[in-house]
Structures are given as C-alpha cells and as structure tokens.
Length: 344
Image (tube, rainbow, N blue to C red; front, top):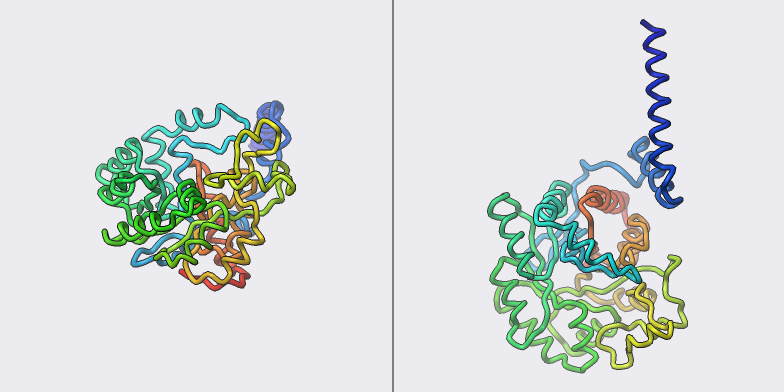
C-alpha cells in the first residue's frame, strides 16, 4: 500500500509538473514571474502582501456617508481604457464586462469590504445597477461621475437614480478651470448639494483644486491624480509639459504625431500635488494611482496613502478585487506613515 501510494504520488507530481511546464512554456517572462509570485503568496499568505481577508475594510466619512478607503472605479466596466497604443483594449473591455460580469464584480467588491463604486450614469450602467440593487439585493453605494452640460443632464441622472454623492469628472474639471469658468463649477456644486448629496471636483493638474479653493467654491472633496514616475513607459520629464491633457489651451494632441504626447502619465507633478494637498483640509480621493495599470497595486496604493490620500479610486477586474481589497486592508492595518492628517 505504502509503495503504491508513493508511486501514485510521484506520478501525480510528475504529471502536475509537466502540466505546469506546458502551461508556462508559451508564456512571456512577465506572466511567468506573476505566476511564480502568486504561488509564493499562496504559500505564505501573511507575507504582508496577501492574504488576510478577515480584517475589516477601513472607512472614512464624506458628508454623512461612510465610504470604503478603496473605491471601485468605473472606466473598465464602462468599456473605457487608457490604452496607450493598444487600439483593441476598449472594445475588449466592452465585450468582457457584460451585465452579469459587472454584477459579479460589484458583488465581489461587497464581499471584500468595498462598499462604494463610481461610474458614469450611462444607460447601460443604470440598467445594470438597478438590476443589482433590486433583483440581486446588492447594497453597494454609487458615487456619481458626472459631466457638466447646461441642463445638468448627467448630474440629474445621478440624483434621480440613487447616487450617494456626485463629483464633476476630471475632463470637465480641467476644462472649466482652464477656461476660467469657476462660477459654472460652483453653480453645479450648489445644485448637487441642494439635492442633499455631497459634491466634489476631479482634475488631472494641481491647478484644479488650487483654483477651486482660491475661488472659494464649496467643494466637499477633491479627486486628484497621484502616482509616482517609476515605471518604464512613463513620459520623459522634458515632455511632461505636453501632458496637461484636458482643458489646457496649450495642449494639442497633434503633438502625439511628433512624439511629444504620451498617453501614459496622469500626474505630471506628483511632488507638487503632495505638497499642495498637504495643507488642504478636505477629503482627497486619489485616482490613477496605478498609472492606468503600469504600477503594481501594493506599490501604488502604499504611495497614495503615505502621501496623503484619504481614499483611492481604482479600476478593477473581477479577478483583481480580492487582492486589491486585501492589499488595502493590510497597508492600513500595519499603519501608514504620513504627514498629512486623515481628513475623512
């Protein structure tokens, strides 16, 4: 019996090894390293990276609403990708994120303590969200991601369909700040607050929160990009002046043809962002903390929290939710060394 058992076990191990080699044989070096890393994490779940999912997800308050420190972003489920030069990526997302897949993703978020997601009030999103709430019994909160049209169409859609709060999207925040139309931003924020919701403004350049504060706008929280520049595809520093992106009259995407524009950086001045947000006494939700997928989560999350973010806003596939949630819990449970007080 013993000999047979040992022989069977040797055959099993040999077969498993062969199977693994066959699977990994056609993989890139990056994929092999990721698999090797995941294997080590599974063997040592208390390595500080993965995995103690019994820890409660920390939360913070904006207005009267309690939000998980990590919030699920809406670009991926909406089929929008900062694809750099990968032209197939957005269509791939639109095909991957079927209504059932979106619902499964939100359910996984709730299971792992992520109680809030953010998304545009598109027809598809609203349909799926109502299915999730009313047919699946889901409880995830929706942070509305709105544009700024003249009749407040997208803001009203967020209000009418159950958003817990609303922020003016970064494209619009940038555009109206650079146009000097702070009064229009202020009126939109007042409209949101008159309807009983907390309100915010998002922006890519630090000029957005600076100008909003200087104008005395009643902003409950800011969304501001934050990530470091330690990834190989980062825009060279000498070209970053061309990456202000939305709203800046000096920004011209035609520079892309001449090699100046790089769709791979969203915080062109992280040091300036950290310095300014240090003295801002309002909640700050950092977004693009992984530079649209170029920075590993543990690295990007740690950088954002240590440098003052009260929340992080992260796009996630369903298979990333658990790990992202646990990384957030572990970072915060171990205590974050930061100079900026928690403002939420």
